[in-house]
Amino acid sequence: MRLAFAGGGTGGHIAPGRRVLEALDERPAGLVWFTSGRAVEDRALAGLDESLAGIPWERVKGALEPPAGGAPGIGRIASRLLPEVWSARQKLKQHQSELLLGLGGFSALAPVLAARSLGIPCGWLEVNTISGRATRVLAPLCQRVWHAWEVTSRGRETDVVVGPPLEPSLFAEVDEPEARAAREAHGFDPERPLLVVLGGSQGALGLNRFVAAHAEELVAGGLSVLHQCGPGRTGEGAGALQSYRAVEFVEDVPSLLAGADLALARAGASTVAELGAARVPAVFVPHPASPDRHQHRNAELLGDGARVVDEAQLGAGCVELLIRLAGPQGAEERASMRATLSGKVPRDGARSVARELTGWLSS
Image (cartoon, rainbow, N blue to C red; front, side, top):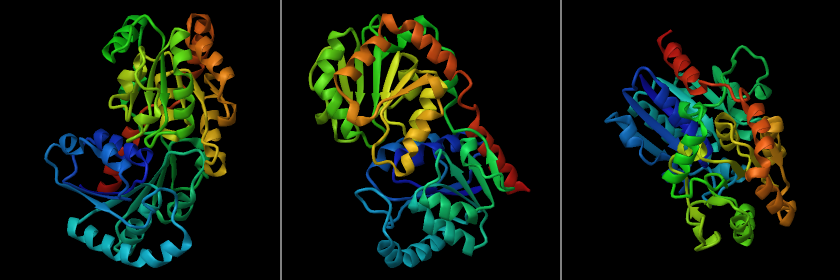
């Protein structure tokens, strides 16, 4: 099985592909992965050599998406698309790819068109609750579209709802002794409630500013705080402070969430799915400029298992909410939120996609 993956630009487009690779029963004979070339992808792809265990693979960096982020404009697409398609055709032929899986973003545009021109079957993985421009353009060109959530499926023959591709360990039941051990393993007092701040793979300026301004109050209120700031952005954190730590990236999400009492987070699709699977009560602050308010829609998937606060409302009231909800006085409310989260996120999304990929190729 010789695979091609296409998608990048954010960690949320890379991580689902990695989960699908890990879930394959049959190890691929080779892999070519088309990405945008943005720096954030380097961290998301770190360790792939080891996990592929000697299987040859190549990362191909495209030039269609702007390096600074965001979707490309019409002019950029018009000037770069044909050379990108030609280059992708050459790579697909060189790697003898038998199937291409699109993971999201405009970095998948040229590879999907190239694969179609070569007669290579294409699938698409949609992890959001509102399909973006790239998905709306490319999913109709694919023979199969796997959806993380029912809301994006249109009921076509090509649509299959499988759940979000996640690490199976996120679904593990964690008792209080295990939660204390997880907090201690991450360098925190096991007896203090742990607030995890997740800004997404690129970090979130609004969350970083809020935490930097109020970390002392959160710590004084009895909390430990793990603050994921984003690549190169730990300087936006609160600095040296007991029971507080700023990191660029969370290396082991399941282990960290096992010790978390509460999360303050952006509402990207991957973050929402991970928190829901781990049954961690969350306060979501959707990105105010997310297209079609899709981060609000993402947060709504967890129902009463989460609270939503607009970024403009970040301030003293939110500090009080976090301290109350994460602390002893919020224990009953957290228990109710955890009960709501149970079963909200379908299991085995990555496994379902991996099985279909293998079966689809062999049929």
